[in-house]
Length: 282
Image 1 (cartoon, rainbow, N blue to C red):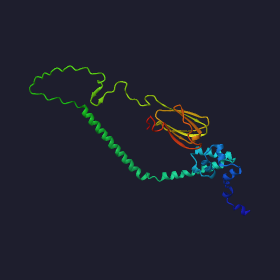
Image 2 (cartoon, rainbow, N blue to C red):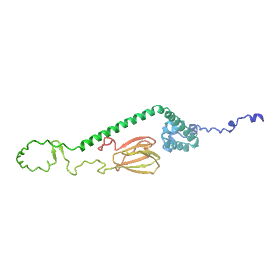
Image 3 (tube, rainbow, N blue to C red):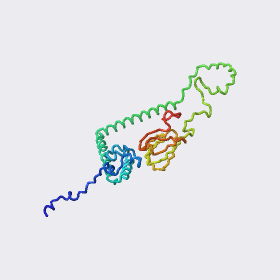
Image 4 (spheres, rainbow, N blue to C red):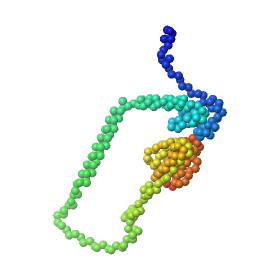
């Protein structure tokens, strides 16, 4: 009875450790190879090998990696929860590194000095702007000094009448001085966006695909497209695309299909229209 009471409570209440099965052995026992799983799931062989060996650092972003783990487990016939829990622990292990980097920043010692320098510089700039404004206002508001008055008025000289000038042609009437030409009405140069020309892009998903879209200089946004999803977007200058599954979508740009973009599971980055086309892009 005494020996049983000496057992620590923590040891008796500790939960069993969740272990991840040997995925490679289970796959081989099922008679499957990685290419066989690829044919079923269309997940890249590199990502399938990373899931099987637990090398999660080789997987794409989490929104994609979780789906790859689920596809692998479903095809092999194992429970995906232990693998997903192991992947979540891997993601948690990455967070302390970022926190330590933030703590090491020397903020308390130099923060006050930097704020004082920035405030002083701002005060000098504001003072200089006020002085310049007062100086310009003083010069603009001062009346022009009258011309000196002569002691005895002298008769104004008689000027000859100017000779009649020939009619100026309408084409040359726009020229004011040598090298400066006044633009005729309606000849103002318009940018492509002002002229109303827009680029049209249609995105159709055949498989589960992650995509990030940047239109002109607007903030980028991302989406996870499912098979059958369709997106139509317009831009005045360009599109910047980051695609996580090049073989999973179809792109139609300006009414023309772009064909195959890459292999299934391949990550690509592209710009439409490409630099070097007829239209300049920033």
